[in-house]
Image 1 (spheres, rainbow, N blue to C red):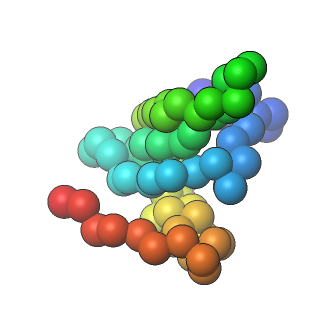
Image 2 (cartoon, one colour):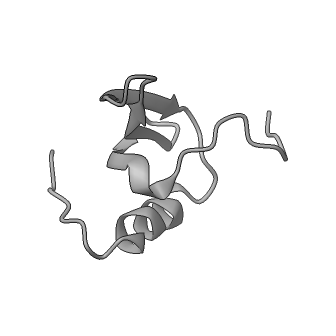
Length: 73
């Protein structure tokens, strides 16, 4: 099932990690979310299937050139 509306919006500035996951071409996105008292905590969202996952992965990791990405296997 696909949707034309997003259920979750994550600011690109808050993304701390992106990982290809699963045999169904999924993605796992790690991001930091602020709390009411100003602290940030890490959250993870798993998307089980994404059309054109490899293209999206490349766009996310190349969007912010000031960040350094580490290859984790």
